[in-house]
Length: 155
Image (cartoon, rainbow, N blue to C red):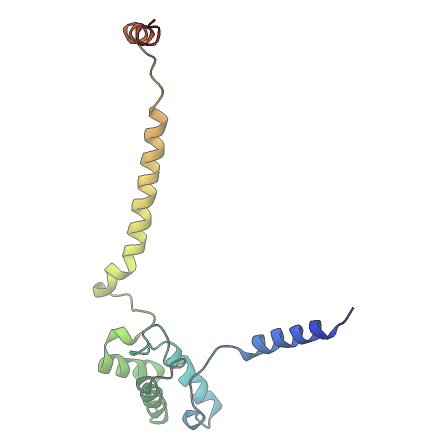
């Protein structure tokens, strides 16, 4: 057997696994301090790209995502805490910029809708199962059996 195709396949799989997640952070954006860069990445991973909408700003190549990444890093250099940076970005762009919405009175419907839908589905299934138990087949009356017999035995 030729082992070369297996080696190539194994190397390809290892290369794909080693690549990890995609990151759009450019080398000129990276902070020199590894701890601050790690904080910037943590904050950025929770912020939504307003152009792509389903990607974090860390994963997006959109110019607005780059601007947001730079704002996060500028605020870190200025000495802001993670919460202050997030509050600043939310104040500027609204809560939609958060990939994980906050649990508050105005977002209660967002958080409770899945629970309500699942509860209504479970209630519907329970009622359906319960109604099927009570639906036992009824026997025909003597008059109904005679009528069927008369209809089927015509000559």
